[in-house]
Image 1: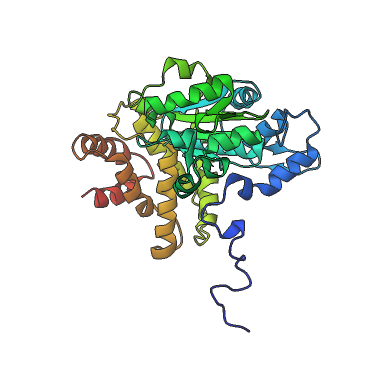
Image 2 (image 1 turned 90 degrees about the horizontal axis):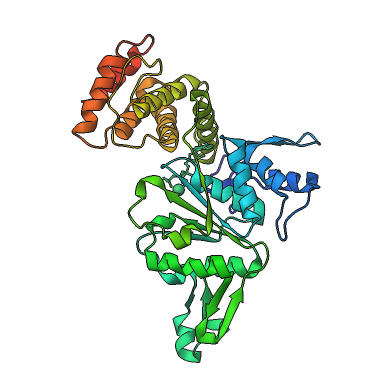
Length: 376
Ligand SMILES: Nc1ncnc2c1ncn2[C@@H]1O[C@H](COP(=O)(O)OP(=O)(O)OP(=O)(O)O)[C@@H](O)[C@H]1O
Ligand SMILES: [Mg+2]
């Protein structure tokens, strides 16, 4: 017997996808993408790694003729995914719009991975995003030494995508200052990026397109100009339609995040997941699921993404400090933290929920007590 070292033979070699805290979609699902490419005999748009049908199958899941199972990445209306994929095959760009936590970023990453084989040509939109992030910048040492030259130019992800005929992603488009947003207009309408300093331009190669995401709630931070909006087809991603859909999404993501974080395996978290989703959906809707009691809605978004974090955090508590079973007490603190964002108004809504709904509900006694304890 040899002693277990941190790098025991069972842990994957450093640098492999399994050891990364968060591998890119194309790394995490390389096997599925390869199986799809092998089975895919439909026409592919220029430079697409897969046909539009195979891209949609990658996102929505399915079983290939050879029996290879493709896991669903996105749970939602098939038509939305088809519209999104079809848009990318046209000369219009794709804008994914929705409230926080509706998988806009997630869908954008998977689309880029499936269509272009990589999801890394990314512009992260913030109030400080400068034009260089959308067009190009300079390596100042070379610029000073040699003057403007192709070697001194530092391409943006968008420029690289144009040259190579791939998808570029722009996250949080409406957070980008409007003059910087405008730099995208020429790119999207003329498919060209002029470089006046060098007297040249970069013309987009077939296969180039842009996927942008924007948040419904941020509207007004930097409104999309109508000129830019016309260059996009908008697909609005909805909140999960049914309770069961949302439970399905949370269960899948919690399982894969638990694996990525190497949390000890815990059995049967299903009950607590259903409870977290119930609380989130009822508070979001402002009514209990039987429609009998109306409730105050708290100010937070209570998104699916937050439900996923609450359960994952609960699993860590249960695994490291509990008895190995996810219990009400492990999710209570997370739920209260997600619900009570504003210490005054949200607390009122939360107390009402606890006393009127949780306290009276069959089988919720443990949850009620645990929440009372952390709510103080
Ligand atoms: N319908 C869904 N199908 C699959 N996963 C979903 C769905 N809705 C939410 N998720 C999960 O929620 C998590 C958060 O999604 P993501 O970060 O993409 O949200 P977002 O819409 O970009 O939010 P934000 O506006 O805050 O940027 C992801 O892990 C994703 O798996
Ligand atoms: Mg996002």
